[in-house]
Length: 448
Ligand SMILES: C[S@@+](CC[C@H](N)C(=O)[O-])C[C@H]1O[C@@H](n2cnc3c(N)ncnc32)[C@H](O)[C@@H]1O
Image 1 (cartoon, rainbow, N blue to C red):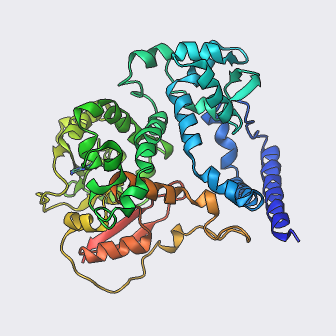
Image 2 (cartoon, rainbow, N blue to C red):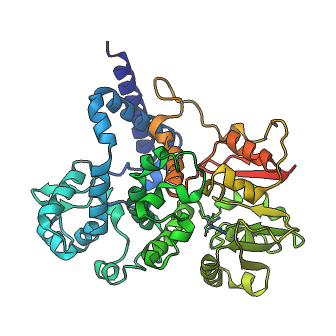
Image 3 (cartoon, helix red, strand yellow):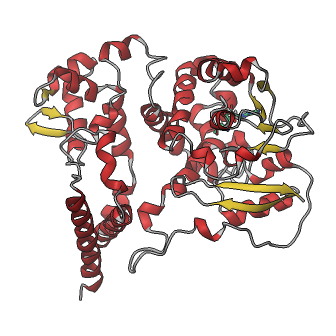
């Protein structure tokens, strides 16, 4: 009996049928893999029911592969070193940009290699490995063209621009390629030391930031935030700054407004964006609410960049003094005692529970509460035999969790975990704001 295999194939068949029917009816094409990526061609995903069908097809297809593939081969493929090695070489050599600039139907690997100043005999092996995984297309032996996936490697600048400006090459971009660079470099290098950090008795049970796998990979016992500001990390710091904007750019411009009623704040209210980076979380709030006063706190170097950012994005708010940016160490005593709201966006996941206690302080415990909105962030159950959490399509947050472990010795948290952390530091979760456009919903907590 191959009942499970047939069941999975049926789920794929049903969901791809739904995609085809919906897109055909609305006259929207599903882009082919051979075409370069174009954000405008993503409209098909927004058709009613299509995203759910995509998730079902992908989840079932992965489960089918896991079922059919010899198990030892699955383990070997999980090893991942080949993927990371090949992807980084293709990305850093700017092969996709070279191919695009050459025009035509493909470029011989000798020409790509000569421009990228690498050995063509090595590059061809990398590109062929990737082409076998649907990244690039080998249109004839040793001749490569871009496809939908490889075209995403393009930074969006000319090859000569990129080569002449290695530090600032990502500046002015959406940040997604800077994020690729960050993942393929410091994250991948640190990731391979995760077992050493988790098994060495000196670090195995540590929750200190400095004991993250990152420290082993780069031979420096330092928190990511200190390490990345060292003079020899100048390229990585510039890249990381742009990469952080990628998260912002994957969300609608007004994403911060999907949640707490920011418009309800008045000129008597002070909003403090703690470790707010450049302050791009509060920029839409400042624009939609011309009264509320805002202070953005972060490390001195980030605050310098933040002032430049606000001068470009919303100079009036800075000039009037309504928005201020101030250097402040997150772990020092909070000098502002009169804030209406402390905003912590994408901050808690950068530190372990023990460390977050310094930030939130004042332990008190109380019983569990019913929190409005909590159930709203649960996604509907998938059909069996798919995994209850939707398998690979639901695994993004687990990946992000491991990312936090590798770089910061910290973690992502479930709502239950966050609620306990809040309660143990004197805060109570009172509302969750479900938002289908955002994996990280806004959560409101009040002092106990
Ligand atoms: C993941 S970023 C989030 C930034 C911002 N909240 C946002 O959502 O865009 C983490 C921020 O924490 C800041 N940070 C790290 N260590 C800090 C410290 N000791 N004191 C103040 N800020 C710190 C970093 O500079 C960075 O801007």
